[in-house]
Image 1 (cartoon, rainbow, N blue to C red):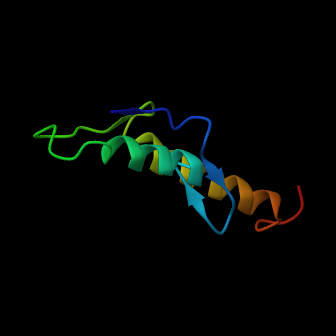
Image 2 (cartoon, rainbow, N blue to C red):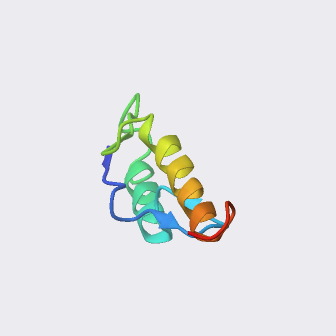
Length: 73
């Protein structure tokens, strides 16, 4: 099952997520559509596995700079 997580990320400072609610529900529906019809379920994403932490850290750093954490720009 392949999930395109590029366009549905939530970038709110208080709640970051790789999937919005609609995309997360779609993923649940697909994974649970016909239980017992598969032995293993592999879920992949369009982003490399190391990229989400990197993006999160970079966005947090950028938000801190923009909010004046290190003084005026």
